[in-house]
Image (tube, rainbow, N blue to C red; front, side):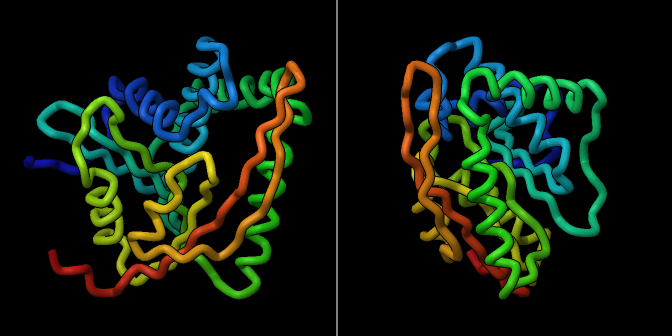
Length: 211
């Protein structure tokens, strides 16, 4: 299958956050479909706003996957007042549905990054990677990572993930688990979700892999 890598089209934003909702299993946290879609859009806008690398994999006009990365010293790829406002509003509203907000998750990530930064100086963060869950095509995520690494040779990058996602994917592609934390998220209706948060790291080869 012939793929092209280019910036994601605005008309495909809805598809991108649908990829995240399904691939990152947000439905394990939020049972209401309206809230699920609000959060999926929020997560997409939040990461898009800070990304300097926006890499979308297309087959013709069909979006198959997206990778976002925030790299030091690079200009942001997308900026929108409407998107920023949406993120701020949902930041406030989500505290209604998650006890103490997503505080435990954010705190765990902050602690892991602080500890990791004592020994490493990362050049950037991969903040979003999701593929089309409705198309059973193997290797899209790998190809997106490979394209990103081609653009950022020799850089050290990190990413956050958790036990609710397919974190083993990164281990099989050269990322090392640098930090982890055990947390619990408390939701309405006295529902608690235990979670392990991970920070993975990789130094991208200066010479791209031959394929």
